[in-house]
Length: 231
Image (cartoon, rainbow, N blue to C red; front, side, top):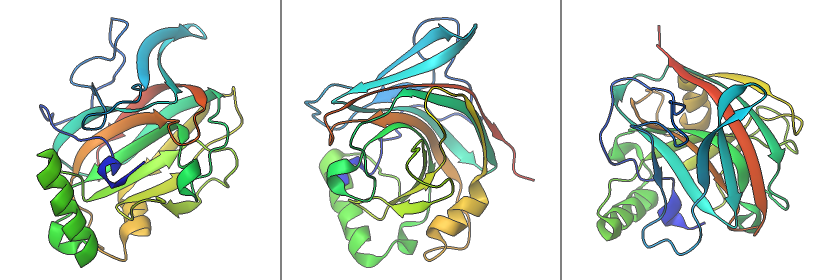
């Protein structure tokens, strides 16, 4: 994972509200779209809608792969993000504290449209250079909830490659469904409060998995994703 993967690029049509990726077909429903890296050579993470335990859920599989499922948003306030997930096959060798282990079998991320002026100078310059190379506007602050049974739930980590991404561990035992509900504003202040106490609007919600650093194979499932309005 390099700086260019601060997260998936959130271009495309933006919606006012978050909708479910689980529609009537076997592919994620629009406006969700799969996004990889510019000129990505490795396989993309695979996203499909399948029957699991008597309900339609999103299946996320990564085999030496990288990719994100992105739902762009427009001027959405940071409310409460809720979902259910399970991991049947973890990313072996994952260790989010190190570059060589910076993989996860399942993650749900929020892109915050934090003003560039709030970003520390060196990182601001790196963002500008990356945006110039890709022609895309990169998220200035990304908060990812990661399924990682090795970490105590609530553990906060910085991405091993860039401080523009912060992780919060939120996982459980493999092959068991777990309900998640998180206050995005409170978690933003916890993760990025050293840069901004004001919570910026959301620009996207992202579902992903990546196993490119560990060369492993992961399988996870997700359902019930919703963004509840902020009070």
